Image (cartoon, rainbow, N blue to C red; front, side):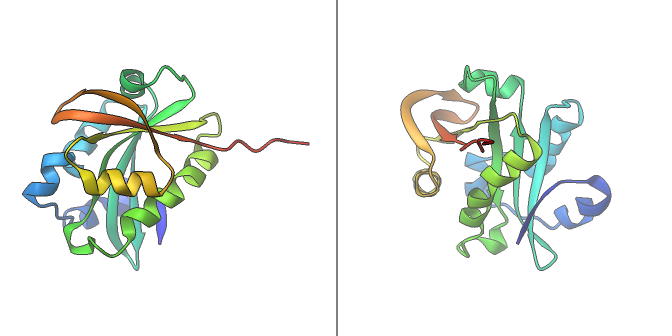
Length: 162
């Protein structure tokens, strides 16, 4: 399994087959809509996870305006539009992606020391996943585009040169 930056040339056709149910869309953004938003925002970075040539997950990092809505940490990056293709749900892909994400951020955004995300208060499955991989609920609640959300934080361990 690999986590990559989305590229139009390599991944657009593969993403056409990406499927989300109505229930999933209640809690996340359709990848095609997220890609449209990213076209005009140089601080949004669409990512995909692939396994054996198929896209299993879509997510986006937001290093600017979105982050400011949920964190005062200028070195934080916001994770948004997280989803797993319906055909790949229940196979552990989401957990593996979330476990890979801190190293990906450290490699590609070395100045970042925190990942922030928001999860709908009714999306208990996602909350459990985020807790399991180390995200912390510090008690902050706010309103998001699709209802009340919990703001969660993951502190990235910085490498110290000796």
